[in-house]
Image 1: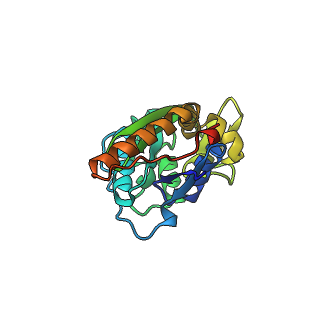
Image 2: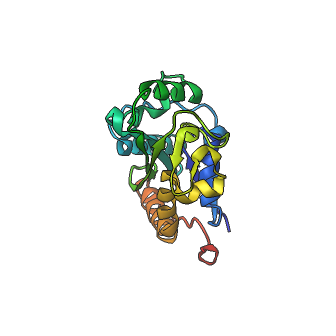
Image 3: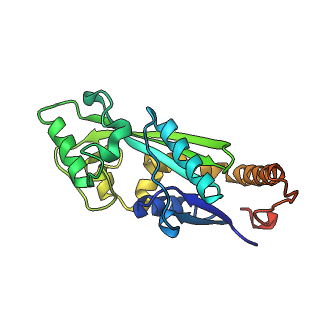
Length: 226
């Protein structure tokens, strides 16, 4: 019974661990880009999270020849007309650190009373030949005037989630996974994973026929499916 190999198109170990934790009960072998050799960088030039997620997933799937899950997520702040949005990871520049991005955000909101914001996430699960599944979700919150907490990554220490009375930076991985934008999108994927496995099998078989191999591929033993 060989588990399905699924690639997460990221080198961010925090993000891949978050995904691994949510999908831990399924027969998959989860890899991320740190497990492979050099892979060309994907230019995230889409105007929406959906475009960027699919571009990353489909490109990586084609390069590695494996089904690939990618997400594009970011922070939209109401007072900044949705910024940093799709530019969240490079808000302060192409090589900006989390701290630099956070500092730029705080500077942009200096003296601003409306601190409403939301995290958005779109997940794309793509096959090497192009077909993909898409999941999306949001999480509403507020931007604090100073960071709180040492956990998480990105804007987590600044993002206050009122129902929990904590920032994402103060939450455990388990707490955050239950309420975060990425956690909600992955939960939707998790609820449908039996169907996703079937979809993956069908797509694999179609790709083998397209390549003229005439072989059927079974990605898992039916008895192993939860």
